[in-house]
Amino acid sequence: MLNLNINEGNFSLRSYLNLENDFAVKQKNDPRLRFYNLYFEARKIFNIATVKLGRQPIFNSVAGGVFDGAYLEVKPENYRFFVYYGGNVPAYQKLEITDKWEDDYILGGKFSTSVLKNFQLGVSYIKKNFRTEKYFAARLGTDLNPVNLLIENNSNQYQFVSGEISYELPNTISINTRYDYDLNFEKTSKFEIDGNYEPIDKLNLNVYYQYREPRIRYNSIFSVFDYGNTQEVEVGGVYKFSNMISALARFANVTYKDDESQRFTAGLVTSYGTLTYRRTFGYAGELDAVSLFSGYTFLEGFLTPSVGVSFTSYKLSKTASEKNSLTTILAGVNIRPLRILSFDLQGQFLNNKIYKNDFRMFFKINYWFNTNLDMM
Image (cartoon, rainbow, N blue to C red; front, top):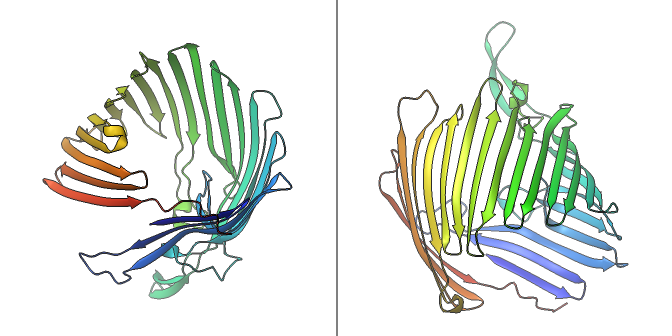
């Protein structure tokens, strides 16, 4: 993995590459070089604008990832506006650009403002087209004999408009809402509201609600099926006993088209590790799980051992007669002789009805090349 940035003032050339090879079993495409990022960035143009050109990341709840194209952001005081357009990245992140821009692109933008005190308002739009490969399939003809038919789908995958409203009164209350509307299916895709309240200094209470339709690509065969929506309500809280230990508890109810399920979580979070219990029951199946994880740094970051263990008992549905169990154990150590150099060793053990006493070892060396070279 290589993360290399070359900078000069407000200009940067950014890259993120990965070279992989299977040394145990020879693969057809070994070695494989993946280009996750490779783009030019210019910042503070007229003190308000940023431009990016090339293969770059995009953060979006509908269709995030990377794309090959252009990004423009303008950010005057209390306002932010950005637009982007580009082609979809080919399989395995090859250093290639699409040659079918009309059927293989992503387009979008967002406008947000904090001009109202304690409020953050935003509206966004995204459209993604991706044409799948055409293929032949056997179908019955008019004479009920099988014929080969060319199957070719449209390229339209996603098209959404979204709105966001957030309110925050520091150290007291915060409310975040989001609404997604699917322009292809012409219906609400998702609505959520998340609220936090701090009645006293060490206590935080949370309420969360979500309505959601399954997110199906418009040009997918699955779009013809009738899926039911889900609604979820969760309440919980965190109490901070001290700077070293906190306790948390949450309970949620999920309503499906014809049924419902519940889940409960409780745990302790300390500076030495976490202990968590989780239980789910109802339509989504039954599960009881206890997990413990601990990690601590010694010798000013030179040595960091860690250990984790979890025990799980579950049924795939509330009416299932069989109950399964799962045990996982991991132990590892991180050694960092230098700030830019570290070694990781971890062992993982898994035991269930499918993998009996499965044990694996992982070893990794990290050398941080992502130092600004100031060469341009």
